[in-house]
Image (cartoon, rainbow, N blue to C red):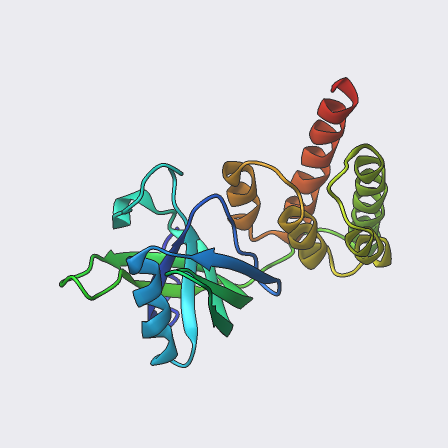
Amino acid sequence: METTGAELKRLPVLPLRGLTAFPHMIIHFDVGRMMSIRALEASMKNGQMIFLTAQRELKTDAPSPGDLYQMGTVCMVRQILRLPGDNIRVLVEGRSRALAHQFTAPEKDDDCIYAEVEELSDYVIGVTERRAQALVRTAQERFAEYAQNASRISQDVELTVAEGGEPGWLADYIAQNLPVEVEAKQEILEELNVTRRLAMVIRLLGEETEILKIE
């Protein structure tokens, strides 16, 4: 992706392991790595803003900038809770998709990775309102079928999907709540065209439902 000329923000980076953060979603997770704790501390001095992006390999314990996806999510840190031991539980709210144009490795031991990020906006091209709503209904139907075969989907999630919503948001919400590989969620995160994103989720739901039926 090329720079659009938008303002770049320098934000601390918290690498996610086996997790993907989506815009307008609230997620919580535990952190124990010092680089992640330092990123949280830096965010507290930076208006509570932080850049969350997934690392490519789960086994990498000390990821370098090259181990991280460029597309991630600018988030607001809402709550930090210190747990027994050295772990911290953090609650964040996704704000927007963002592209890291440059990562900066820590310059000293008590520092974290930083990134120059560009916040990105969703868009819709050449799709009528009727077509968009048809995609929303299809996604709801596919998700309902998936939930019938899955054991780990809560009733709250089912009800939220049944209520529907804007196509881009619904795609993100469903993706956030699917227990699929990080790579699959990353593809959805990187799609800015909202109807194409929802179509990707519909296809993913179909594939996952078939797997569940076979199992």
